[in-house]
Each structure stands twice: as C-alpha cells, then as structure tokens.
Image: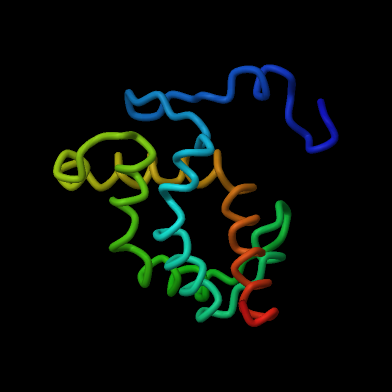
Length: 130
C-alpha cells in the first residue's frame, strides 16, 4: 500500500465496473469540463455548512446536512454522470434510479480527492477575495 492507503493494483488499474459501465477516475480534460458543475456543487456545499474537512476519510458526516446537500444538487447529478460516462443526458435520464445512484456514488468515490481539492480551491478563492 502507498501512503494514501491505495494498493498497487488500484493505482495501476483504477477503473471499476458498475452496472455494466467501466468507470475511470476523471482525466485532466474531464475535470476541466466538470468545473462549472463542481463550482455549483461546492457553492451549495458551503451554503449547507460543509468544509473540506467534512469530506476527509473517516470523518462522520451530519446526515441531515448531507441529505439537504443531496436534495439541493440532485438536478446536477445526471450532468455529472453524463460528463463522466460520456453517455447522452437523455440515456442517463431514462436509467432506473438504483442504477443511477450506484453509478453516481462510484463516481464520487473514484474522484473524491479531486472533488475535495476543488472544494478547497473554491473556499480559498472566496476567502482570498478572488
């Protein structure tokens, strides 16, 4: 295992299969493409009282606060899934809700470090006045 607790196979082969889809962590281009959506999610997370520390592994998240965040950002979830899977939004809109939730949670898990970094940058910009 490396210092972040990832095993060698997870580093070399970061893709996973979920609901028949092969999911890979976001590439640099996908992350850039995801910027406007992540900015909206991060603003809503901040409005719900979240800080970057809330998303650290092992931290207990306030379920009411998390549920409020999910309800607020729910309209953005299909866009995040579409940009990640490179499938059409109309195809994703027609998925069974269980499939959509499983795929979305897998995307979150795979990209949590990138999301946390975006959250921290967003907060720093606000604090620094940028």
